[in-house]
Length: 575
Image 1: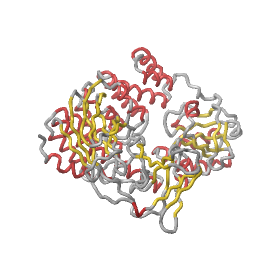
Image 2 (image 1 turned 120 degrees about the vertical axis):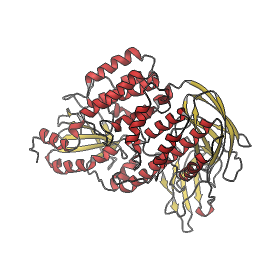
Image 3 (image 1 turned 90 degrees about the vertical axis):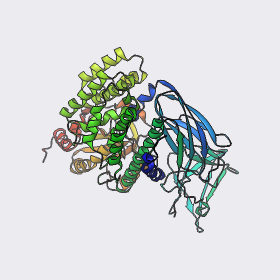
Image 4 (image 1 turned 45 degrees about the vertical axis):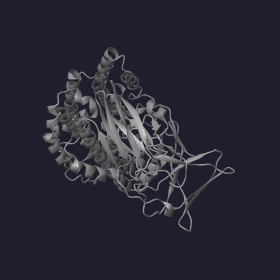
């Protein structure tokens, strides 16, 4: 049996952090990179069975269990539990999989499982009831299929009403009544149907073509409780699940706090997260752990934390862990994203990412070392994906040509890489002097106005692809406002195209950065992203008055160099 003292502190921290867990608005890494591991999972079958109970210790007729590839991914499928709350699921992908537990009016719970061999695990869980807001200034409703929530009407008695004509036979909705402002089911409206992430929709049936919903905050159930789980398996399984669960809780709380800070200040600068001694204690656990396999997994888990901006994360220690696990070690397959610690460790441990030529070469040398030594096809694919994207972003045509040749010859059976080559071709249509691709977008400020290649003729303008939580995009805002104010009367304009929804962009512009130029959202317009070969964000392109491409080098269109570039093409002497 595992020494309970080993878990005494983590269990307490996990329960505290678990209450705060929410969906992250900021992804730690691009999904195309993270998901590659899933494509190659070798077949393993781990059977997990147990019971799911609500906060009062009772089974629920609506209880569901699903499996997911990560702590933020949508479950592949949900299955209903038996009447007594019992369930049984099989995990078939080698790696770390998550069991997702859901009951209406309860926080969903995700438990990580190490699926590395054939085995059986018993996992019993008790979910925590939602913590609802104490007071309500407003309540919003999200209709299934609607792009953004709508406000409910507050009545004099403190209740909230929603009425709408509809031709639907049934109406699914969620309310933002949960303490962390997450949209969840209305506890007074049944039946419930699960959404994609572990919460539920409430279902009502319209009468005479009209849906009527009345929400009374006084009727909300107030049940303070803590989620808990009991896992019966081997010693490593028990330790890993609890350690990873606690780690996920810290990462989620960090991301949630960053998101809340951003929504309030419209910037990430100045954000600080107090993780206490978590990472200091984590290193001590690593150094005291006797099982060599678990030690490696914990070290890699430590490496995956580098993007969180934690104060006590020791990059010197991270470098030690990184070099202590050789590229050919199969442990990397369980945390393929840990490889990207390379971006922080080189050229030196205390330097943040600066994309200059020397660092690019240093990083590529480390990636090449992994590519040469690893025996894992999923790791090779992850690295090759990174190299292709970087070669495209830096305009390294020769490197891109080499990668195309390598992948075409040696990875014909890897669909993810073959798709990647089609997405990032060697020959680009975005060459200097070429015609700008045709496009037409609707103005964010006036839906009756459209911007197109034709309507923008006569001005030198910057097309800026961005999104509201993109840190480097936000870092460019001050510079964009300065050059716009300086050159707007000299024939220069900006067209910002956000891949976020209208509501997020409007919220962003109500705060510090007004963006007084042309704006549009292209959340559903994948064609324009494909035509302009957008591979990263921010993605600036300078277009001439004749509609032809003047500059596509991102380095020349960001920071101080942007003004120099504009002065050159506008034939104005820079200050």
